[in-house]
Image (cartoon, rainbow, N blue to C red; front, side, top):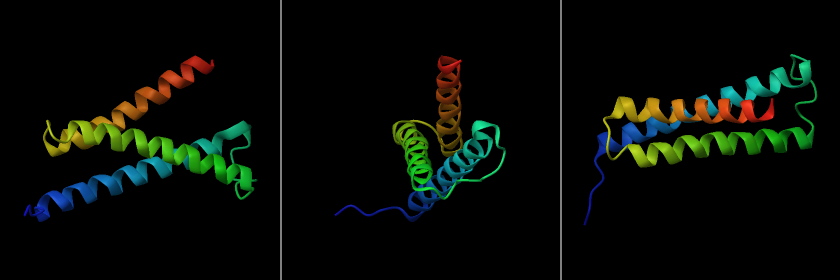
Length: 99
């Protein structure tokens, strides 16, 4: 029977908590600057909450997917930094496509 190493479990938990914070912070920032209001007015509207949830799930999913691929090959510090970097590159590419 396989046992789970407590250190690995703690590292994964720290990584996931970091990704949650990055995804939530990024979503809140995007909604703050949305449409030039520079405020959170209308944030509690159901359609805005749905959009916030979708963006949060997308940002978190990208980071977790990249982390899942690279965590087996790279050391812990780089395997946390790389998903955040990939998310930034994906967002930049998406922004350039919109402009």
